[in-house]
Image 1 (cartoon, rainbow over the protein chains, first blue to last red):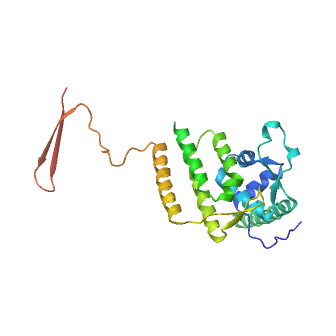
Image 2 (cartoon, each protein chain N blue to C red):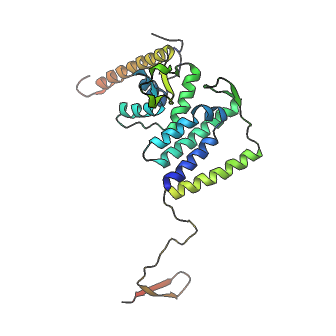
Image 3 (cartoon, helix red, strand yellow):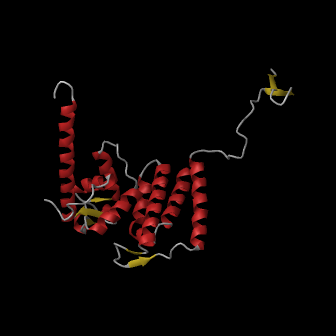
Amino acid sequence: MVSDSGKRPPLSSATLHILLALAGGDLHGYGIIQEVARNSDGHYKLGPGTLYDNLKKLMDAGWVADAPAQRRKSAKEDDRRFYTLTKKGRDTLATEVDRLQSVISEAKFRLQIARPGKA
Amino acid sequence: MKRILSRLAYRFLLRLHPASFQHDFGDEMLWIFDEQPGGAAYLLFDGAISLLRQRCRLLNDPGQLSITSGVVITDPGMGPLRLFQGGLSSTAILACFLLLLGHRNPLSPSVRWPKQMASCTLKLQSIANIDVDCRTTP
């Protein structure tokens, strides 16, 4: 499960949200923005500038790639670029989720200790 | 009208992005701008931040690989002409922002006298004591 990025710093919010959105399936740019808004209940708003800035970095890193043309759903979407999560990207996301899980476990444990009457 | 102006400003912002970035994502960014129903000011701000990030990245790596075409597109760099263009465009974008936000010309007087206020008397008693007496006529 652990990828080559074992000592990599935590992912930024935008990167994490984009990878999470693409983990559900191939999406075009506007689809990613909508999926991120849906996943965060509208709390995290991603603009096109932030999106493509991050997508470029993710594509350079090999975590995201252009989706093959046959995966596109309709003729209307043919001229849109779709993006897909690569194996490397999925591994990175899994590593980040594991890291976040350990942070949450630690936080819950500490809060339980700090709670009066439960120590 | 506001939407057309903000679209023009956004297109202008996109044209200031590095060539490789523009080539790969420019059309899509404009498409998303058209798809989003409101929040033009936010999109313009987001575009400006993106421009700043891309330009800063370009300073470290002048030849950027275009993902779609697979060729390295080298930007001409920031010469005096580019700096002049940047200054001009920043002023234009700022003017558009102010227009979008509904600001008035900051040089025009901000105080408007009511129409009923017919006469105002200014009594200068001393430097520190100015008495303004305004009377409305029926």
